[in-house]
Each structure stands twice: as C-alpha cells, then as structure tokens.
Image 1 (cartoon, rainbow over the protein chains, first blue to last red):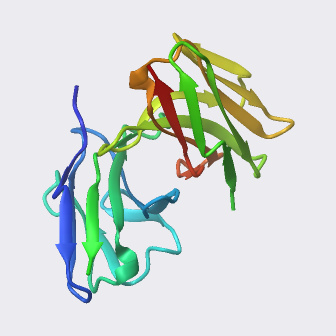
Image 2 (cartoon, rainbow over the protein chains, first blue to last red):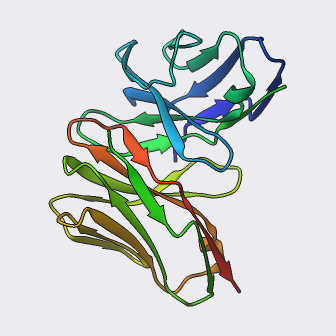
Length: 114
Length: 112
C-alpha cells in the first residue's frame, strides 16, 4: 500500500540555522499539508498546498517558514532561522482530491533545535 | 475558530474490556469528524470517520457516534487488545475546509 514518506526521521540543528524537511507524498495525490506536534500537545496545522501554491496557512506559518514542491514529487518545508520553540514533530500529509476528506500522514520528522 | 476538547487524556483498560473516548467541538458548521490512531514513532493513521449526516458508524470492533445537537462525538472500541494501545486523536473539520482541528489525544493502554 502506498505511503507518505518523510526524511530525515530526526534532525538536530543549532538555533538560527536553516533546516529543510522533506516529504514524498503518495503518487497522484493532489493536496499536501504540513502539521507540527510539540511534545505532549495537539497536532497543529501549518500549511496546505495545492496546484503549486499555498492554499491555506495558519498563524504559526510565519515568514520563517516556506514550502515548495521543487520536482513534482518531493514536498519540502523550510525553516529559515530555527528557534528553540520550533522543536517538534513535523508531519507531512496528503489528500487524494477534492472529493475526499481523508488525509494520509507520514511518519514525521523530529526536529530538535539546540 | 474551531475548538476540540478530548477526554480522558489517559485510559487504562484490561484486555477484552471496552474503551470509550469522548470529544466535543465548538463550531456547529463542522461536518467531518475523523479519528486517528498514533503508534509510537509513527504518524497519525485514520481509523474511522463520520460525517454530520450520520449518527453512528461501525467498523468491526470500533464505532463512532455523533450527537450534532450536543456537539459531541465518541469513539468506542470493544474487545480491546494489547495492540490497540496507542494515542487516539479526534478531529473536526469545518464545512468546505479540509483542515482538521485536533483534540489533545488520549493515551489508551490495554493491559494483557
């Protein structure tokens, strides 16, 4: 069964450094999402992406964040200058098309900012 | 915006018992309510969902009920097994938006 994959599984970085989290969505799925989950807290929506542009974003998704789909398969989340409070699990998810609600989540990337 | 509350935060049961997790939501426009299971080291996986035009849905040992008037919905797991142990999240989506608002999660522990 096809799955959403994410790399790396764990990323450790110094405060102020840039990080890029990578996701490979399921082939032919059209809608893509990033969520984060700070340890012990709710899963929070960051951004949704469709047709090569952001369709919706939350207040968390400020100018430090950006997303792109550089090659038609990978879907990346970039954090330009990481802060301690960016430490969290970051989940990529996708959705088939506009007729279905189901989102498929990847295994996540644990980001640790020191 | 939508606010989803989930209880309990931890639920410990003996194998074979039933488990019930309850959620409430605030926005009456929400019309899609998925439940996710998150095992250690993995992302949330959809286990069952329900729409606002349905009061109950069942899939083998799991069922979900929805009370639109009271704005609450519940997950029921019968004949629990140790492999049911995980964190369960409820969520609600506003009509026209597919962005779920998640509850805080329930850690279900099934003792053999």
